[in-house]
Length: 194
Image (cartoon, rainbow, N blue to C red):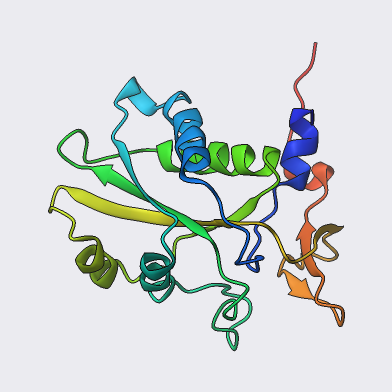
């Protein structure tokens, strides 16, 4: 079993998958159940979820997503490399107009559950919400927050040390996806110790 540190380090945004490797619906439910049991601001629990493992419905969701801001000429994964599942995160505005940081907590929890099970994913906030709302036939009270794409990772993602503040992710000639991270010393402004 992986430690929390190992899970966090292995949990990278993956954008290319072995599309034929299915995720059974019960796993999606298990990962959402992890999120359900995580912290929620004011314990309001306004998040709702739509789960999809259906190939036809997945294709409809796929068409509403933008995949990698630093790769403007890339339209996302090709057929055969697309996610085999999606989780659409919604805010139920009948419960609360503000979901505070619940989406981040829930998304990270779902991705850690997926990573532990040998899968991976990517949180996508660049969504054509108007069109996806129509596809999902959502009542007005539900606000689309983001979509988590999930599947069996096909790409290798590695962490690099950010050099001179350069934090844009990139792919090398072998299509290894590099993610620069700032040094710990750069992000801790003060340590107040006794």
